[in-house]
Length: 125
Image (cartoon, rainbow, N blue to C red; front, side, top):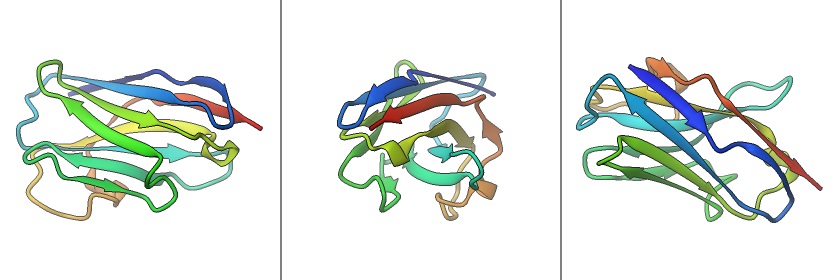
């Protein structure tokens, strides 16, 4: 399984970015997919997740209402739309996958057995 993130960059506070995570190597009919982020000197933290079967979504409180996770089944791609970005959103963003997913806490990074290389998001004030 290979996860490849893209879409990071440098933006000003209040602007938007859309991250993409292209998945290859396995079908994801029973996967849980998530985005995590890690700022310098901090632990990697949960941002958002989507369960492929049924499409249920989950968000960290810090991004709820500003970020949206979605998927494109035809392209085996997961997106993270980030609006109203803040300087505190600055981090390396990682895509993660758990497949097959039969349950468990989607915000727990130990759940995931596949990770991308990360993409840098920098928000200036």
